[in-house]
Image (cartoon, rainbow, N blue to C red; front, top):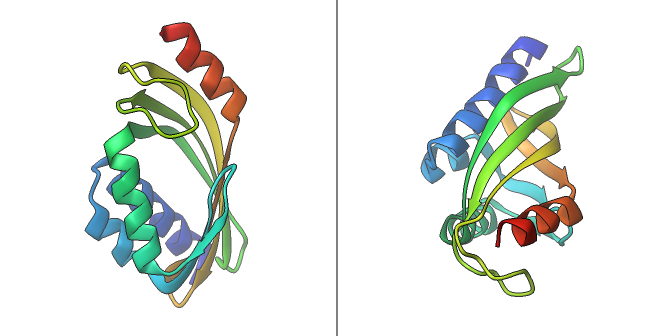
Length: 138
């Protein structure tokens, strides 16, 4: 894949995420996709990624904005930087109570690409900053 094709793939991933189109997101992933979860563990496989997305939909409504995508020249790796605009809809275990608070966070994500699909997604954001915003809005 070229760097341009990888950029288009990552943009399609975030476009599908913003539409909350789980099927479209999953279609962009390899069967054995590795998902490194911010402040969490690692899950492997498309079914696990689907479970993660569906669980997140119940707790959060998020949209990625101001997306910048960087790729290696051969298109096998990419990084994305964006701002997530979200609402905390339902209390998630171990986190503050949800009352519909809104938040904005800078996020960095890293990708590996294999055979035209995303083979790894690693996302990072500042959880203490998220918690501070949620608590301030309560």
